[in-house]
Amino acid sequence: MMLNDMVKRYFILLVALLLYVVTQAQERVWNSAFLKNESPHTLYSFQAGMSWMKFDDTFGVKGKQGYNATFRFMDPLRKVPGNFYWGMEFGFASRGFEKERKGHKEHVMAHSVIISPVQFGHLFKISNVLKVDMRLGLYASGDMAGEYRHNALECTLSGKSKKKDQYGDREKLLPDDWKWNYFDIGGSAGLGIVFCMFNLDFSYRYGLLEAAKNTDWHTRVTTFQVGVVF
Image 1: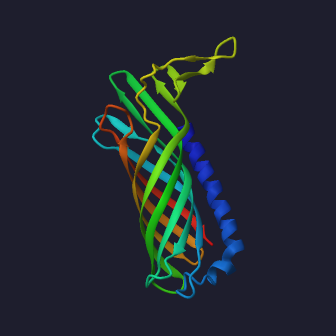
Image 2: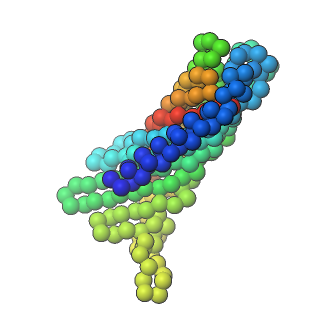
Image 3: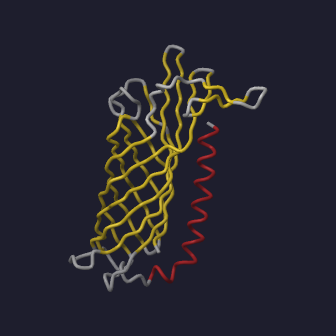
């Protein structure tokens, strides 16, 4: 509950920051040549929001609600007719799961860096100030930090206790074959609405690597973000 409240507070702060940036960038974005189908130039966007995760082929395992924040650029393919573009994306996100049955409680929450090295998309013009963004891409993610809880056991994803002993050391609690996989790669798809400088975006990530080793768990993440384009 405390984690969800914290995520909501950060989300509200991010929305307030985005609104401030919007007011400062309004004139520039309104006159954006790319959005108006004139001489195209590279666009940048910053987005933040919530994510909902689940795993395929699991029983009794629930995905965690988390956060997602990304910075993206869209560079027009000038030799291709229409508003086609290619781009890249860099961001931070969370992923994890919880499991509880017959007195067994397990919880994992990881904080990740996400890089999308290539994306291809198209901006469909509805009017001079309204566009629809559709894209496909690839991504790779790596967990930087996180926590694992098993009943009363609390430790980092690296396996060390979150509590220090009297000497200030952290005891190794998890075996070396701890099965959580810190890395993931896969595909992504996105659908966004660009109105003037505002951006509402929905995306879906489809992980190809097993989230837990020797299982059939594959990460599936749906995100909703708000942002600005400049």
